[in-house]
Picture (cartoon, rainbow, N blue to C red):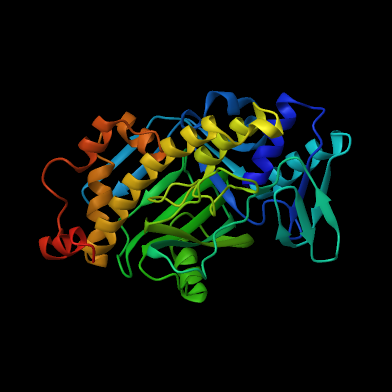
Length: 368
């Protein structure tokens, strides 16, 4: 997604720019759904992100055993299909820009990208926006999910998304269902787990999704399936953005460690790139933006460390039930990676959630 956001941001500001996007997959954006509250995005990004949005709701719900709440911030969703269409059209309108689908980059240098078929692309600025490398050593947990977009035989009755239904049985970590009502009879249902293991049992999870969806109506067709495993590190070494290629996206650390989501951070970086000439992208202002993001990321990583070390899998849910009882502003600033020092204090202040164990907490503090 990061590369596509850079394309839209740059061409919205400088339509004469010449860009090239290299995508190893057959389409831009893969097979994903991204959701965000518009307030979590930088104001400069909203005009070019708006065409990507396929659904907007006036709020969303969360549900826990001891808490049910409707948050009133607007919530919107981007599909990979719309993303691919909008980015491809923007590149097609731009004279001299190009998109290389199904082509893998095998070498990236300061001003060159070599493709596996022997093609070499030259540029004033190279941005490496590849996704997370889940095979690389990492200390932390994972967000893993499987979602099915479904057609039902009748109206499901939902008026807004259910971002977390954590009233379901807890096993393997913090487990919840995520539900997006795309139409009166169409809905996306995802089974999500924050787990210490990246292993995703697709067959069992698919069955669980269909069982949950039966609460909403009889399923008549599975339209689409999506899966993902996102890193939730409690220690990471994001590369300093002081040289080309600029490492962006997940590999550059431009994501939220405690949620796995990347849209707000990626949009901020895309705005930075668009507001400068290629020769001015790297420099003190990017360093300041990166350091500001790292302050937020390190705080989220510390929370991950506590979550995965200090709570048994079945008790992790209590952390999020407590979090979603906080004031709405605190919640959204955290999700946007823009917390204040007072927010960060408020999130951890007070009695710890049920299930917190002091012994592993002390081990964590000692560097275990």
